[in-house]
Image (tube, rainbow, N blue to C red; front, side):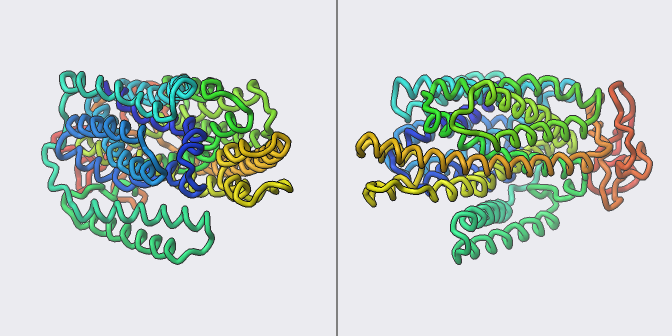
Length: 547
C-alpha cells in the first residue's frame, strides 16, 4: 500500500513536465510564472516536510498519510480545471502542503514495519523502484491522455490511485507513532516554513533578476528564521528535528549527496519534455516513451542497491552512481535538435541507474541512523533534501536555460508583440508562430529552438560538474559507512559524532577513517546515538545490549 503514495507523487511530478507545453499555450504564463508553476510545489513541500514528519511521529503516520492522500487527490482535481497561471500556482502550492504529508509517512512506516535491516533495504529498494515506476508510467499514461484529451486530464490520473490508497490503507496499514512524542511546536513549524521559503525564493529571484531588494530581504528573513529554528530545536526537550543528527558524518553526507544530486539533475528533468516535444517534434506519448530508459534504469538499480552496498561498500555504490550520472550529463553537452533516440536513451539509462543506486542507499543510511520513534523526522530530512535540491535546481539551472533562451535573435518582420511572447518561453514561441506566415514562422521557431538547446546544454554541463564534485565529496564523507546486517537496534556504521561525543567502539578512532568497509556477512554493527552520551551504547535503551 505504501508504494501507492509514492506512485501518487511520482506520477504528479512527471505529468507536469509533459503538460507544460500545452499548459503554456492555454494559460499563457510568463516565463517567470512558468518557473513558479514548476517550483512552487517544491518550495512549499521543502518548508513543511520536517514539520509534517514530526507531526506524523506525534499523531500517527497512517493517519497523516491517508489524510494527506485525500487532500492530494482533491487538489489534483482543482489543478485539472485551473483557468489562469495564478490559480495553477496557488493549487500547486496547496499540493505541496498535501505532498509534505506523504513521503515522510511512507518511509517512516517502512522503518517501523521492517525491523530486520536486510528486509528494510529490500523494502526501501521497492519503495524507490515504485517512485521510478511512477516516473515511467506517468509520462506514458500522461502522453496518451494529452493526445486524446486536454492538458488538465493528466492531473486526474491521481484520483484512482488516491482512492485505492485510502480505501485499502484504512484496513491494511498499521498505525505507527512515537509513544512519547511531546508537543508539536508551532513556532518551530513557522520558523521552518518561513525560513525555507524565504531562502529558496531569494535564490530563485537573484538567479533570474540579479540584485533585487525584495529577494534580498526575503533571503535575510529566511536565513534568520532558519537560525531561530535551529536554536529552538536545541532548547526543546522533544524537538521537531534533533539537530544532533547532523553531527553524524554519514547522515550529513547522505543528505548532502541527495540535495546536490537533485540540484544537478533538475535542468535536465524539467526541460527534457519540452526538448522532446517542442524541439524534436514528438507527440506527448512519444516523449513519455523516450524517457522510459531513465525510469527502467532506476528501478533495476534500486532493487539491487542494498545488496550491492553490502557486497562492496556504501561509498563505492553512492559515489559510483553519482559519477555515472555526472558523466552522462557531460555527454549531453553535445546535445542537438537532431540527437537520435539510441544516444539519448543510452544517456538516460545511465542517469536512471546511477540515481537508483545512489538514492536507495542514501535513504537506507538516513533511516538506519535514528531510533524508529524518530523515523518520521529523519525521513522528512531526506525528503527535504530532495525537494530543496529540486527547487534550487529549477531556480538556478532553470533560470540559466531561460536566460540563454531569451537571448535568441528575432527574425526581421516579426511584430513586436509576437516577439515579446516568443521570448517568454518556447511554448510561447510555438503559439506565436501560428499567427505568422509559414516562412517567417519557421525562421522564428528555428531561432528559438536553437537558443533553447544552447541553454539546455549549458545546464547539463553545469549539472555534470555538480554531480562529479558530489561524487568526490560522497567518497570521503561516507568513508567507513556500512549498512546494517541484522538486529533491530543496530545502525549503519560507523555512526560516530565528529566531535567525539558518541563513538562506535568497533572502529579505530571512531570517526570512520579506516577503510574496513565490511563486505557482506553478519557481525557486530554497533548501536546508534540517542542523546545523553552516557555509559550505555548510544541510541539504545538501557536494557538493549550490543549483539
